[in-house]
Image: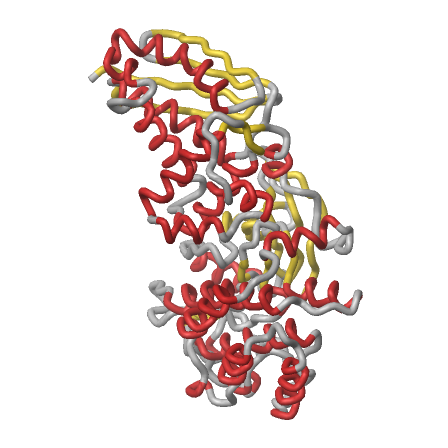
Length: 487
């Protein structure tokens, strides 16, 4: 494994290669895939194209490199379960996956497909196709986010198999007729596979057990679904359309996403996050759910003042709107939702995970890069605090020469006002640089990025020019070095 990474365990071994869970030196968990040697170059070529693709509902490519085990692709790690895992676990206890859960999975997967199908690259100007959707490669995180995974065989739309770098006919139980017949694969091929996956989630058994597309199998499943009071008739109708033998008669992924959205709004039931977390909490899934990521574990040990939560909510509403904030709130845990139901008291203390979940959910939905949402919120909070009428306007009024030392030294008190953990110390090294240390806590990136951005933007507002902030993880905390020049 690459230097600085610690291999935790094997996540999977399949026809395309092996995937391991690894932990980086900064505590981030990644899924590292080593493709089979005979197909490695073709798989790497696909992921090199996909590296520029980013969407909250598709597993992202972090890095492509080589170590002593051979070439690898480092991918975003989704802490949670696959749809296949969910089906197996509910089958063990003779339960059904609630229709409300299946609808949310369908909506998230369709949103990911819609983005992939519309994505253009220099070698694919008509969008890309997943080509291998099944219950094993649609993942649901403990945060309630749905992710499409295993894009090893993805290809530009309408590419025939003989011209593809990694030929595949898809998994027989999920691939559409045209894919099994070795024909061209388009976006409607993925729609068929998604319907077969969703149908299995609802019925707890594959719709098609071999390459034969027997309509009687679909009718049999429909009869079983009709016995369930929680399955909307319009969902059954949509699945039938998605399973049409001819691609031309199937809806595209945009239409699927848009038709499912109102069904999700009308249904009640557990959130995706709480549903997935329940399997881990009850020890019903031992091998598929590893320990919580370091960021989540750290977040559970500290408190945050309500003012920090209120600032996060205000930022999201003012920059993205009430509706967007509501969408962010749909992607957090039931614990956080319970807190947000009541007005947030700025003077009270709350579970620190609330601000982390809000920030990370907003990042996935509206972010522009790793942790950029946390930085934006931190900078925005500084602007609000130091603006006219803000609680720390005095520092801005004094300007750089008179206010910088007072502002940097006051960060000790400012930190204590918002966070109830660790010890903040300041050492001013010169007229144009300072060093702050946070000892006794290891915060998630969403918090550290926010603190760093708050400090940097605050110095800019006081009058600093060319402000540079550098955050460094330490054994028992975090250090921030800040430098600036005068305007």
